[in-house]
Structures are given as structure tokens and as C-alpha cells.
Amino acid sequence: MLPFLKKRLTLIVSLLCMTLHLSGLSYAKETTNAPSTQQSPLSLSKSFLQSQERLAYSLGIQAYIYGYPLVMSAKTMEDMVKNRAPINQFYYADTLASPAYRDIVTPNSDTLYMSAWLDLSETPVRLTVPANPQNRYYTVQMLDAYTNTFRNVSNRSTKQQTGQYIIASPQWKGPTPAHIPVIYAPTNTVWLIGRVEVKGETDLPQAVSFEKQIAIAPVHPKLQTAHIPETLPPDVLSSLSFFQVMTKWIQGNPPPECDRVLLDQFTQAGIDVQKGFDPSDLGPAKLAGLQRALLDAPTIVQNGFPGYTTFRNGWGAFSPIGTYGNQFLARSFIAYSGIGANVPSEEAYYRALTDGGGKPLTGAKSYRLHFTKEQLPKTSAFWSINVYDNELFLAKTAADRASVRSNTGTLAYNPDGSLDLYLQQQPPKGKEGNWLPLPEGEFNLVLRVFAPEPSTLGKPHAWPAVMERKPVQ
Image (cartoon, rainbow, N blue to C red):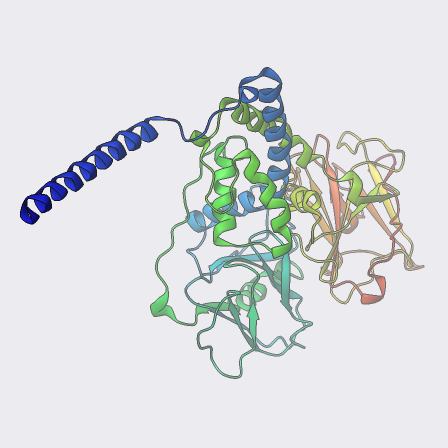
């Protein structure tokens, strides 16, 4: 009997296992075919979809303001690497900027520009600056991917001596040359902007020679690979590709940890700084909200100055500038109107859009600018005034010149030490050295003070108003 019972028990167990297995397959099939989550009826309501669109719009505006400097950095780098110099190499200008200069907005026409885009993700870069016995003003400004200035190496910081510096990524742990100070950049991407004083037309060759002694080279050239910046869509500032470029640059250049509170909110609109931005993952409501944000946000950036600008006598001073902390709208406005602006301790800026009566400046009129001796800018280097058109590039004038500056030896001061500048289209007879040529249409002015005296920093400046006058014939 035992063998027979054993066979029956074995058969029963086998049938039971088969039944359970088939039941499991059936349950699994039903589970697989069933939706994992049930969609709330509210998510299909008109009110809900409107709320999603408005949320995406609101977050899209904030993301645009935050990300604008990053996208402008990407655009500027693409342009310069393509047309100027490869990654980790300097481009040296051998002439002063003219109205044809389009590398950046609001350039000066007083210094030679040199520029380099660094990728520090693989190797640090060594910066070498020469001795400077003539005390020529120069600076090598260092900006992170967010357009914050984090260091200047200048004739003042070097005490006119030769110097070497290592610029490394924030996470660099490898070896660096001994006895050379290491500057740890906040981001892997760094923009170097060099400015070298030109004291007059005859000084240009000497200035170019000095400029080209400022050099960079990778510390570990064998680690460096060829980098070609991504080609950006022409409409990157007004299309959904803006958020793709923004998130990609954030991934390659992580922001300060304190920014995460804001960046985490953007995920609700599909702008995920961890995963990137993919518009195909979004529903119609969120896409519509972001599209609407892209229509309005550029204007908000372009008009982002009121809360940060103080006007006196028609001259506006902007703060913060050069480095911005959590003032993201200020950072974006400067990226729009004067990308690469330096910190006030190195270069102070003042812009005039109107005359003393509050009327827009125009080349159809003539003006005079009178500085008393006490009002003249106080600097250990020099100051200048440049004329710009409404697109924020150097204005085209019949004289083919758009600036006056204090270091050329051509300015004629009055017996009491005061100074009169003549702003008009035609040269004032006998006063050509004090002439600032004007374009035909509307224009604006920027007064720059290079290496301002430290005692003047942080104080309000009441520069003299630009006053309309009859032209000096």
C-alpha cells in the first residue's frame, strides 16, 4: 500500500503546484494589463489643466531668469571658440574695439581685449603674467559659467611683478606644480577676459607686445582632449531648446548648494536639472505654459534694471555688478546689457541714457559735459567715456571714433583744473582733443573708471549732467 499512496500523494502535489502556477500566470497577466495607477478625473478637468499651464508659465519665467546667463555663456563660448581660439587658448586682439566689434555687448574702445574659454574638467590651466615696469593697467578677469567674477589678476595684485597661477576645477585633487598658488574656480567652465591699457595711438604696438606675454597652458596636456562646443539653435533664447541648454550647463557646472531650493521647483514644469529637459515628456498644458513664458521672459530680463539702478543727474549706477549672489534678475540683466562686466573694485561703470533735462540723448543735438576739478574720476589708472547705439554696441560716427579717455595726453583742462567735453557730430574748432563724436541717431554713454581709488568705492557719485548746448563751430 505504501508505494501506491506515495504515488497518489505525488500526483496530488503536482496537480496543486500546476494549479497555483496557472493561477499565478493568470493573475500576473491581469496585473500587467491593468494600469499601474488610476488617473484622477480632476487631472482632465479644465480647471486643473489651466492650473498646470499657469504653474509651468510661472516656473518657466523663473527658470529663464536663472538660466539666462548660462545660455548666454554657451552662446558666447560657441561663437568665440569657432571664430577666435580653441578651448584653453587665448585669443589676442591687436586693435581697439570698433563699431564692427560684436564679440560682446557694451565693449570699451580703450583697452585691448584678450579672451579664453577654459574647460577645467580634465586638467588645470597655468596662467602666466609678465613683469610690468611701466605700470601699464591690465587685468585678467575670471568668470564662472554663471558670469560671476571670482578673481582678477591685475597690475595692482601682482605689484608689477611677473607671476604664475594655477586655475583648477572645484573638484580637482590631482598634482599641481609646487610653489604656484592654486585658484579653485567655482565651475568647470571658466571665461578669462583680459584688458590691456593702450595709452594712445603710438602706444598700440607696445600694448600688443605686452598683451601677448600674458599666456595660458594646460598643466597636464596629455589629459586634455579636443573640445568642440555644441552647436546651438539660432533661436535658443526664444525656443524650448533654451531649457535643454540650461540644464545641460547646470549638469556640467553644478551651482552653489543654496540654489537647489529654487532649482528643485523647476522640476514641476519638466525642467529637471538632474535628468535634463525633454519636451516630449510633457503634456500640452505644461508645454503651453513654457511657450508662453518664452514670449514674456526675455522682456523681463531686458527691463530688469529698475530695482538695481540708482540715477543721479542722468547717470545710472548698477548694483550688484560683477558678482551677484542670489540676485538672479540682476545677473541676467547684466548678461543681456554688458556680459563680462567686472567688479567695481577693478572697473566701475556708469551709464547715461538722458540729458540733464531727462530727454533721450540724440546725435541731432549737441551737448557739453563739465567736470569740476573735484568731480573728475579718482583712479590709479585712467577713465573713459564711450558712446553706444541702441543695440549696445559702439556707435558709428563720422570721425570713426566713439570715446575719449584720460590717458592719451590729448585732453585740455581749464586753468582751475576743470574739464569741458564737447559732445556733437562735428569737431569743435580748436577743441578737438576734448571732442566726443556723436552718431546720427539716439545713443547712450558709459563712463568707466579703471582701478578706481578704494576710498571712492561704495559711495554715490553725482557726475555732472550731460547738458544740451549750441554746437561749438
